[in-house]
Image 1 (tube, rainbow, N blue to C red):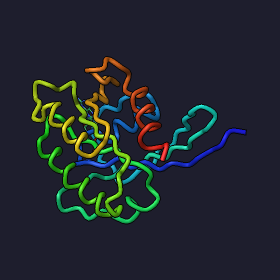
Image 2: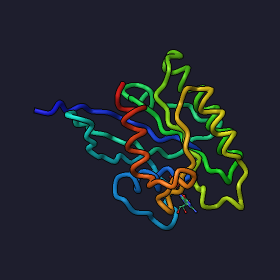
Image 3: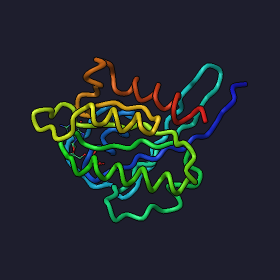
Length: 177
Ligand code: GDP
């Protein structure tokens, strides 16, 4: 009998950075055109690692800003975080830094399983955040970093499929804790 484990992962970041699009790509394998602001939505997917099955619940949040107070439901019972900014918005990158601080404080400063995602990499002519800045920030947290395009389902610099990459990252950083 495989061991089935439940893992809850929250997707946080400023509004319109592509949180819903990433969650949708990960679970459904398709990109949704158009912007429909999310209230809060949960996606489920079962991922297999060796003999173990993980029932993954992805919580797609409404989006946060510098004034957001994180509810307990984003802290208690959450096993890992996907922090998303858009490479076309320096503001969204700055929001991520304050979000991480709040999470860190909420979790009693233990090391957090985090995947940092710089989304909308297909819009690089409009880039406001360099990849090296995202990489350095993630390194300072001991987190994993990737630039992605939810639109193209791609991790451009690795020339790999986004869904595959996210699966591996979730397994190594958010699930095996
Ligand atoms: P959320 O508010 O963070 O959940 O953002 P959404 O997923 O709703 O996306 C906001 C807008 O950005 C929508 O119009 C999406 O179609 C668009 N979008 C999301 N991801 C990408 C991407 O990787 N590339 C491009 N070009 N547009 C994207």
